[in-house]
Length: 228
Image 1 (cartoon, helix red, strand yellow):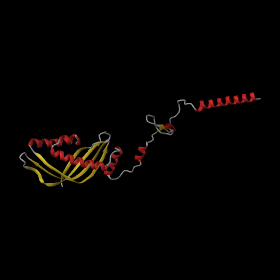
Image 2 (cartoon, helix red, strand yellow):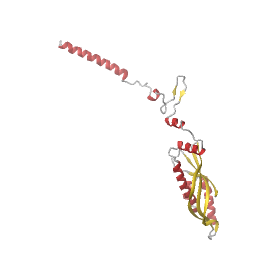
Image 3 (cartoon, one colour):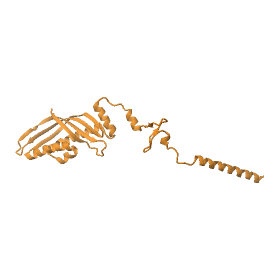
Image 4 (tube, one colour):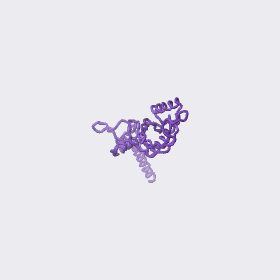
């Protein structure tokens, strides 16, 4: 009796083992033909072909960033719209930080230009603007002139234009500044300006930067201005 029960248990165990083995062969093995998770849920992984709908048309699903940007309402003001385009292209761009940097750049540029400091000017200016500034500096040197200059301060700085053209961002600002400036000859005679009079000047400057560049610095690409 004991032997027959033992034999029955052994047979049941063998049957269970066969069933489990068959389940494993069906459910537990990969055949190499499984669809990736992205394909099962209609999403395209990098490097994969786009999914298709039953009609055979390609189904392109935007990523999260594209969907978020598509839902952003674009401002009607052209300056605000241009700044938004720049921010979307360069996630590190901040308007307030840019204006603060532009204020510093303005003082550095006008001071270096008056002193004829080419090395200080070169990294801040585009090639075309540097060539124009260098031509003026060279003319003063040839005539033996120098500029006596004191920067007093900035009364107002504001953005007047902003645009993104492909990968090139351009921002134009108006600067209302005060400084003392006088151009003197080799004998110290004043040729232009006033060494004791504070001047108020309005300048319109445009800075530009390639938003895909690893260099975070903006360069001055055009200038215009007239005394207030």
